[in-house]
Amino acid sequence: MMKKRALMLLLAFVFMFATACGNQSESTNESKDKGSSEKVKLNMWVFGSTGYEKLAEEYMKDHPNVDIKIQSTQFDDHHNALFTALSAGSGAPDIAMIEVNNIERYREAQDRFYNLYDFGAKDIKDKYLDWKWRIGESADGSFLFGLPTDIGPTAMFYRADVFEAAGLPTDPAEVAQLIPDWNAYAEVAATIKEKTGKPIADNVELVYNALRDQAPVQYFNEKEELLIEKEPYIKQAYDYTVSLIQKGYLGSNGLWTPEWGNAMEKGSYATLLAPAWMQGVVKGNAPNSAGKWLITNMPGGAGNWGGSYLTIPKESKHPKEAYDFIQWLVAPEQQLKSFKDMGLFPSTPSVYDAPEFKEYKDEYFGGVNTAQVFAEAAQKVKTVYMGKNYTLVQGEIIKALTNVQKKKADPEKEWEEAIKRIKRQLERQ
Image (cartoon, rainbow, N blue to C red; front, side):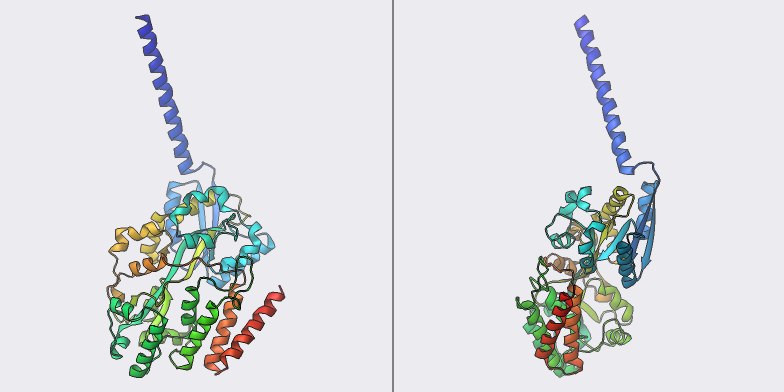
């Protein structure tokens, strides 16, 4: 009897101990989820319209000790101010948004940022598109500058009324079948020019960019060596664009100019080779063209233009709290909210299977499930190393193409001059 009573007391003690441990663990986890009680203020810099203010309010309700202030400025002002602050060693925020092409500017300033792998970012890597994640890493993959936000997978916007006037199909699936590659695109350009007198695209830059973005390598390798004379892809993109210029198949409106926007509304050209975020630009510039602009697959494959990363500059006194917030902000659940509220296209492929994506229809674009078109493109994008001097090379090639179009300059001479200018600028660094 005594042995039985002792056993019962022992079991009771074990139960009470286990319960106490369980409660303690639960309390610890809850504390971890909600953060500490220490008051923390996080300054965050973004550009454009992200809608992150609304999400930050949601986060602060669950983390009352965290106060997040978001400052939004124009694209160039934002990146220049961040570059200046990092160079000066003072004035940088706790969290900074950096656009994908601009992240190359900061690679040599790696020591001015926290390595997000030190906060456990490897644990969430599988939630993101691989190519998007890898652009945010150092060349050797040991350092992570930022967590991925949105992306800009590309597709072909087209004017159904222009296609119809040229006697061509207008249904998105039929147009995709009509123009599977760039040879077919040139043939359709000839038909549209002959039947309507209109160019197939708005300007030289977006056609060249579309081909560039489908190349397996672009301007530099991971050693920052210039590739455009060693690899054929960029010269091929240049030559193809030149061939359309010389046949009069391309318009000459500069990007973002009033003339460019007006042509979008008037249907002065047939296609716009552009990323997902261009949907809002089209709607803004062409409010009376609902049902005339449709979207289908890009000829020749997919590419990406745009998208950003959230980084934590080394000046932050609260990197752990900053990481906790940005990890939450770019999680699939929040990226779906950003897509629904602001049209930011998610870099988390699990969102593409959400009912909101599969059943999505955009009446402006003729009821097309544009989300699915861009989701399919996003999963076909190749990983490409861009290099810290990416914008330098891009600018010189576009300058050469513009001279070919507007000054009737010799294409080969323009190419050679562009190469010389690029090399001179690289040598001065």
